[in-house]
Length: 117
Image 1 (spheres, rainbow, N blue to C red):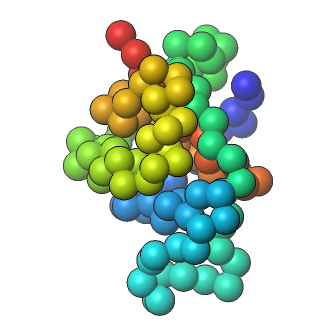
Image 2: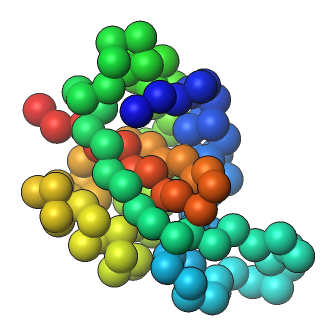
């Protein structure tokens, strides 16, 4: 998998509680002021273990993850726990939200990045 820049990860996490909860066609439950005319529809979820990334990409992701506050990371994990589709995708890979370190959303695909020991 190729990632053009790790800044997308930081941007996604800096938004606070993600609004990607509308997986697989569900409607968002964000407050009206947070919704826009162009809402993001998640068509699929993929889970990527950071250790499986190419060394160059893994380094960029790790650098970006290192700048994320623990409270932002916990908000992200809490959002994942309230999203059955995300929980199922993680369980299918033998992972849990406690291992998630970042997400990206592009072209209708939610990518969840996880770190294992």
